[in-house]
Image 1 (cartoon, rainbow, N blue to C red):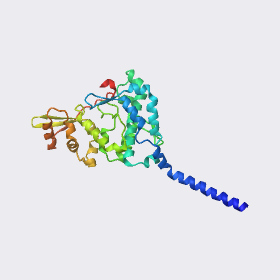
Image 2 (tube, one colour; image 1 turned 120 degrees about the horizontal axis):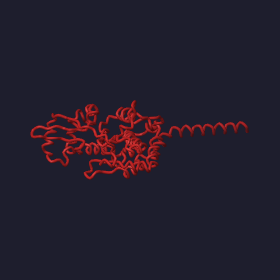
Image 3 (cartoon, rainbow, N blue to C red; image 1 turned 180 degrees about the vertical axis):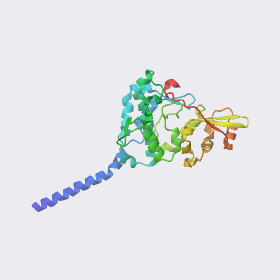
Image 4 (cartoon, rainbow, N blue to C red; image 1 turned 135 degrees about the vertical axis):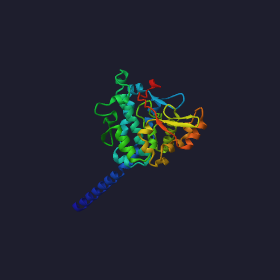
Length: 292
């Protein structure tokens, strides 16, 4: 009888251990299934605080509302911070990139909302003012990601630009300045990521305040956002079919000449592919609704 009990006991141990091992092996999959890749809460928040200009080419953020209802943003960002490295690694490429773009933009919103009193008191007017003598605001480790303290530069340079071959992210990452690309009133999601990134490039290039093609008789030039100066190398590696900034301008030529007075002359210039490219000064004022 004791022998039978012992055998039964050992059997149950095997069952328990085996079940535990199976659960642990499935845990990353279960975690991945639990994460909302449609970003329902984040999307709802963006719809409430992102305002679009009359020409649909610019957006601004209602930071006052974000600061007052800080719990909504905190809840969303806690969901981002709860994602483990193993969980992230189990996702497909589109899910991973969507997550990092949303995280960058979301934590940027937090940086402004957390310091909103400084803005309302007039002590700061730009995200750049939130840095210190020894570090920029993008180097401040004020949030957690994958279980470790991180800053915004980590997401952009050490994750997105390092892990992905996608230059269009420069039209999707929004650093809370007027000259930045427009913040979408929706989250980036894996099943629409290709369309969203293309849409961002078109929106960014269609706004003459940020990017413009200027024609004077037979001559002309491009006046582009400084983003294309800072990250020109990312558009010259053949990624996305871009080997030069001329390739970028020609791919999105319809957006560049949208609503302009002399679109045909601009298109003719773009086809030549050999004209001066200058870069606009960057407007670092906060992309707040007050600065529309």
